[in-house]
Image: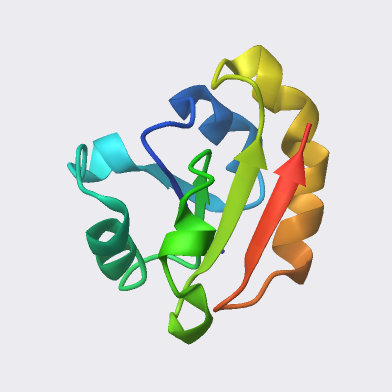
Length: 107
């Protein structure tokens, strides 16, 4: 599965997910600063899942008709120490998620 980490997610999380999946970051793709709707337009052309901390994506974007899924991480901050405990939950969600779906994962 091809995953894209939003710019608000620590790039260091990549190492823990790339054991099983192909993981890229928004910064590596050169998409820094691109707003949600346009980012999703770009991402759905190349990726299966966008992983973000942006809670505004589900209410603002209609993901149901998209060829991408979104995982929203509900954490206090984007530090790796905050994200690492979520890795098992993220991997489990990736086994279940489908295009057009949004899943929220809480710390």
